[in-house]
Amino acid sequence: MRSRVLTLTAFGGAVCLALPAFGAGVTVYRNDDGKYVKMGGRLQIQYHRADPDRGDATDEVFFRRLRPYIEGSAHKNWKGKFQWDMGKAEGENEVAIKDAYLQYKGLKGLKITLGNQNFPFSREFLTSSKYQELVERTFVGDHNYGTPDRNVSLTVHGLALGKKFEWAVAAGAAEIDPDAKKLDFDTPVNRNEDFNQGWMFGGRAEFHPLGYLKKSQGDFAREPKATIGVAAFLWSNDDDNNAYTDDSGADASSGKKPDVSRVTGFEVSGAVRGGGISVDAEYNRFHAETVDDAVSAGLYENGETDLWSFAVEGGVMVLPGVLEAVAGYQIQDADGYDQAWTRTSLGLNWFLKKHDIKLQATYRLGQDLNGKDGADEDELFVQAQYVF
Image (cartoon, rainbow, N blue to C red):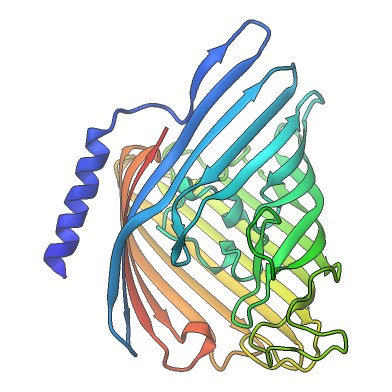
């Protein structure tokens, strides 16, 4: 095991060193009228080993994300972007649409965006995967457990008070995968026919007392910054596609794949930076109801659940801008769980060109997976990242 990890770590470092260093995104065309075309992407090569207490250990090497994008403008104050992913997530490879939107920026302090985009909920989810300190997101930023994924929506985003106050409101379409073990949001732009369709409305507000704090983890600037934010949303099933519940209200799959009728979510989050130290914390709470109010499986008891999660993660620059020691703790509980599900993480990040070129290693200890008493699992993640 040790020799395998060392070999993969050396391989990842060699890959990173062999790649040329560029800033994120390359402008391939621009004229005096502001018209431009920009191309970029991210490449994440990951090694993952899972060692459950009950069962055999497994490991694999794969492309976690292989995500190119094209962005451009043909008219003043207007911008368009589309981005897709060819990496592997949740056990399978697929080509998936990510960003696909048009945006208007002609009003001071405002951006109006229409299309497939991030919904304004969960600071950790809104922090791009390329700017994360831990290799994988925690519960609070995971669309499998209540946090909305990208969806087709109209969003208005604003900054005021010298960028110390930030706000956003959004309305759009979002889908849920009917799974008793998850509260799994997904974009309507997908290939699945059994997802519950519905409408979502929500918003967020953030205060940055020491100046605007970007959604990026790790402290390279070593300047004191802080933020606190709140957000909320409502999702409601439009009853167009309840594949597992018949017209009489009976659940056709005995609770194994319950159709979801309504979800409300609430978030409070915060972050601090300074002196090479970076800390992020977030608490989310969701209430979900199923179409069949007799479902008692996975997260649910008698057709509903209160699902909550909390995570704190942080890092210290051991060698400023080069080597960071990181740690995190997360906990999640639901009405249908026997025990709260916890994860504790330790890791190191080696930055060759800040987040653009880096090598990460995270060791995660999981206890009581999916709320089942004694279902423990240790995991190792090693990831090389190149952003251009």
